[in-house]
Length: 459
Image (cartoon, rainbow, N blue to C red; front, side):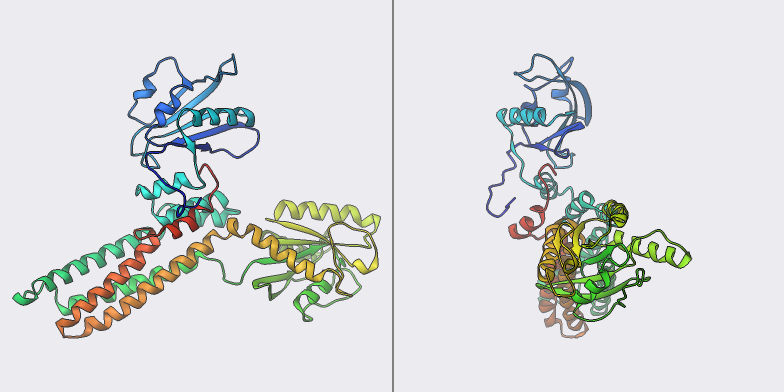
């Protein structure tokens, strides 16, 4: 969606598929807009028509009428007919069997009846513009959708439930009250009326800075560690992982030996490829542990698989027939536990076997291609897996601007010259504007476009 170029009208009624693409037990078509009921009227039928005049959130069982089908298709209608809905407009969802051809045909019928296709994120955008959620909560919707693990889901749900939005709102309210008191005194400066004393001004600004510092710590804690994406090298023992690790790192960090199982702990190194900073991790080879130490090494390696943004599975070109079954077992386990897996063939200098990208840490074959492929894979998934980092970066920038303005305000509040109050009011307005940027009280089309374009259609 491009909110800066595409026309937006509250008078439009929009519709989209809200369930995942492909066949399933249930498919969902979602609508919102002032003409929601009239758009649905020709399609959805029940024993009576009272759903068309309902003023309460309700659920109705019936069927959809499809001109090309003589039979009746069972459907359930969930209706939120008033401005108390998620989007601030009438909202409806049709729940029926998840047949892609059926859903596409019904969606075309909705468009023929007056709806238009929803743009990516437009349902959530309408919720934001209607004041139902703020900008932080809108980003949290995307976070809930794209959460890859329990931690990401927890962070997104906390932000959706209020997160730092509530203390931010309280801080903005306190600063607005202070600005109102200050400007009231400026209006009556010739009459020597003092609406708020100098000590009280200084104390309220200092308290605001203290709250702001707490918010900065809270926001920073929601982000990633700042070390960059984690890329794990995995594979059977003696698959060439440590040699590849050293070659990619450009330095000798891992002990290399022809004896399998040399690596017991995991090693990390920070690298930068094509402007992308990342952490490269070498783990113990996948095998059935023979003792407690080996079992601990396997547990550490599996933990790194789950934490990784990308696991690079290393299968050597000289893999024996006896090792192939273990390799397939390990690769399948990594694919199940990791977020993303890239299979490559190592030791390309020793044979012509293997699949995927062929590399050799000995003669350098394919190393540049592997670096480029890793960066490409990380960039491809970044928009869906780093929503927290994007939100935190936006918040931290605005919080820093607000803090700088309040620091200047604190200096001005310490002055005894009342003529400084006009400058103090300017700094308070700048702080309020920066805080407003975070929750969306102040926004631009470019900012909305950047946030909501990351959504899928139907959300």
